[in-house]
Length: 320
Ligand code: ATP
Image (cartoon, rainbow, N blue to C red):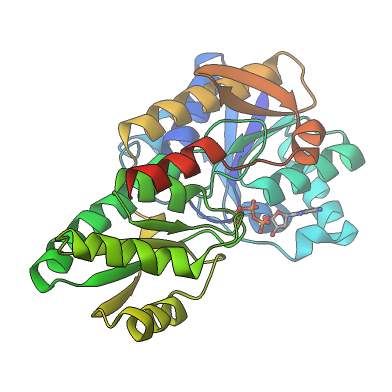
């Protein structure tokens, strides 16, 4: 294998840069050339790509976002768009592709491989942690730490003013961020899309806390679980507590990646290159119980990633 390409796709996540760096340097280490494709599959279709060298990825390991930029590509969903991308595979002499992104990006890579036989390896990069086949995705740890830091700050003001705070975090379909950050942040209640919530129980917990002298309460709500503003209003009406809502939004996507994300991104990126060198056709890499794993993209995409119910129940026990 002489020349491979790398792109980032879907929502950006902290640690994508560390992964790009690993792909580029590992490939160069083994004597290959690397083409960096800008703006995800859009750049693939539009030939927005250029060779990368050791210096192209210098000084990026600590930076959030992605130097290759990212996009969602309507065109790549069409056979015509993918045919144009294949023209660029031939034009640039690409023999393999590393796609860093979420499950949608993996679907695109998989489809492209089936049609044009270009070997592809997917690296899980999304803050959502919703990709099967890996215990953790690149960016999740940073996002959780960002939320916990925000909860710590909110806790200060919540305590000073004796307020209840509802903190809305990202997670339309899954509550991975809400659960991890809620547990780490000592939230009174955690609302996730995977579990129905009991409004009476939420209020009862607040009242119980108040009776034993608690000065503040934090409720973490995944955006897909409930409308945080509505929950705040209902709690205010039911309990009479001064209730405020904070929607963290896109700040959860940014920031310098944690050491955990940088290390994971470096290992996964390097393994992706090894898989291409080994002649694999359409794999994804992941981490299971601390070990690097590789599985067929297709197999990964048919699985669903489920929330750790023990952890969810524990959060409930610890916040009584
Ligand atoms: P995130 O989870 O952060 O949103 P993602 O990778 O899941 O990331 P998507 O927007 O779902 O983000 O997918 C990224 C891109 O992958 C899409 O915009 C599209 O170009 C391509 N893609 C997704 N599904 C397919 C498919 N079935 N065939 C071809 N391309 C696809």
